[in-house]
Image (cartoon, rainbow, N blue to C red; front, side, top):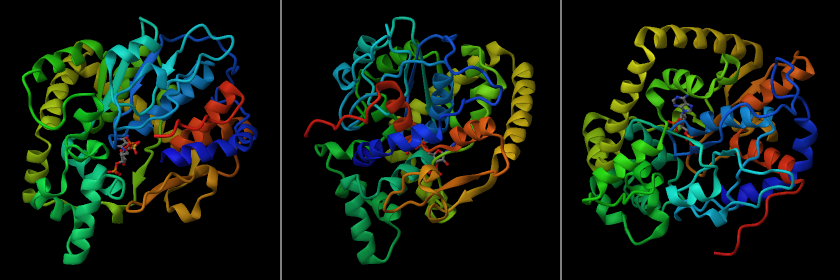
Length: 379
Ligand SMILES: Nc1ncnc2c1ncn2[C@@H]1O[C@H](COP(=O)(O)OS(=O)(=O)O)[C@@H](OP(=O)(O)O)[C@H]1O
């Protein structure tokens, strides 16, 4: 994914031309002053984070926000302020950081303004792990070894891994970061085993984050996000991005689910804790009000989808380069086809909503720096 990000820079000019339309369907002038506080979105792995990121990319682009782009998002490393490219000329601060990173709060605070709002998203740990395993099978050594063993035995890679994960998992191998408790890993915690600092780490995280979205309550999360940032339904309308095709998903029976849960017990604690925090925030907002807002958001989003999408769940081979999501060796990621009869302005809006992460990132980077992404320093 990293290497592809760099290569994608070559498409910069192409994307610039294609997306040289306004990013709202309301016809707002693109060089609008920012109306929202600076924001950090910790992009966790396989949790629906690309969908949230797309909402923030659109918002930031519309408001001419200055993005903090970590020049290399080696997910095995804790975030460092030095990873972020320099402030572009004419900007006095970064407004948005919404990339994958392994969180180090102190380092993030060196880059982002004091008043930055912190957001992230968590997903049911069983679904997250199944998705992380299926998507990263060939890049996480522990998964790859299990995958090879399973091929010999003619079994499912995930079930072979779950039967005896410790055989495949070398905790000293840095590329195994996502192999156990991947969400805790993204949060910068010790994800390998419980230690005494966990409750304190969790409390610190709760204090730092203004909102931890929950993928299972995605629309409710968006309503709370909208209230936090003063966003309209148009800002929050979305398409589910980075979705695996049905045949790339492994069904887990109860036995396998229990094994996933026990292998990822820290993620379960993390998730359960923030689900509770989420419902506390929801009840402060008002449950009836939340329900009504969710219904309105869903109705609005449905209209936008009808207007923008001519075909959903499109296999990668049938998508043009601009709209084809990044594929991995073991997972097929489906995408969208845009309606054909749209005005130029609506086309700009709709394409942005279905634009995969890497293409959108490349477009924004080029727009901000007038050049392609810099190559990561040699490892
Ligand atoms: N709105 C919403 N609600 C719930 N779930 C959603 C949503 N949008 C995307 N998804 C699912 O999230 C998975 C992709 O997550 P990410 O985009 O975070 O993946 S990545 O780490 O950036 O590759 C991927 O999960 P799997 O399909 O199970 O792999 C998506 O289907």
